[in-house]
Amino acid sequence: MPFYNDIPFLKKMARFSPYVFIVVGALIALLGGYIKIILGVIFAASGKYFSDFVQSRITHLETEKEEAWKNTPPQLDVFLARLEGKSDFVLVIDFENKVPINASWHLTTRGDVIASPFFMGHEEIHPKDETNRLQYKQVINVDRIVDGYLKLNFRYFSIHYKELGSPNTLIGEISREYRFRDGALFHWNETSKECIHE
Image (cartoon, rainbow, N blue to C red; front, side):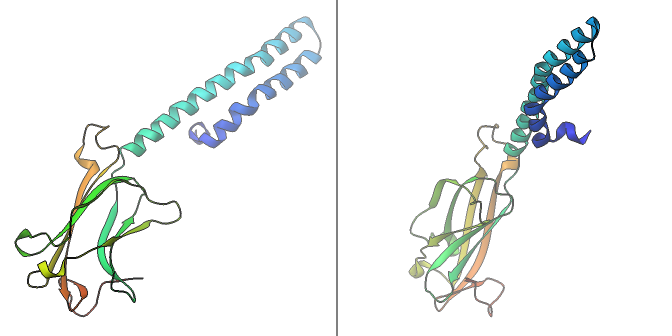
């Protein structure tokens, strides 16, 4: 029964069912007769119990929904790019399912030499309701780059990772390789198309 799992529908049912039971009970009682009056009163009074039953179902469904959300693995992509028309570089995060994350990232070059001033990290990163894309200004230590090679190392885990016992499904790592040349950034395997972010 689809309606039995439809939370908005069940909330309406829980809200209005007591009144429906009272009206129907009153109509039964008005039909006259001692037994019908008793049945009408009993039916009208049972609306509260029915409403409580529906509310318990709503609570159960909402708990299941919350647990499913907490166990949802973050789905996202990250990349480096230069802002169009500017010299600034940014780290861009594209969220696919809006699962909030904890994340840290840094840039390296040949020999795993750090090419960013420091490790970047945020306690929590929450996707915004109006967009799936976030961006953070990224400083690159150009004088540390060897052979034009630049690598982005991005690590993340769901904000529910520790709460749920640190399952491997809620943690991830993304690496991207780039070629840095004449102040421009290219994907490592491409030399003609600069990484530009509008």
